[in-house]
Length: 130
Image 1 (cartoon, rainbow, N blue to C red):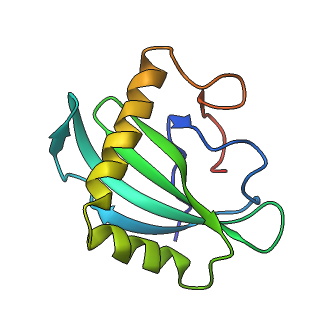
Image 2 (tube, rainbow, N blue to C red; image 1 turned 30 degrees about the vertical axis):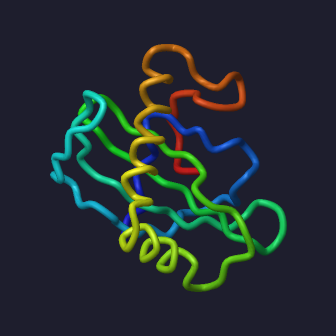
């Protein structure tokens, strides 16, 4: 399986996740076509990363749209082997996914408008995944 593609904007603070390809769990497949805040959301996925410090997990959310993609931290903690699946099941079984997508689109909108989060956050990505 090939490594997931990096998003156009990564809001994950540097040094949060360990090097290496993340696990990925697709919540909404490409071509979903949901419209929200003037974006056409094409795909939503969670990515499970090893934490850079300690034995924990960092779960990020990636939202791909017709105007770009964005990745940000969704959850950090000790987790376990099934932390990604549990987070996905929680989001699928609640109104949490709609709120998460809305938050991610607001972040992407800010980045596209040049109102991003400063030097450690919100830089366009051009390298390998975090």
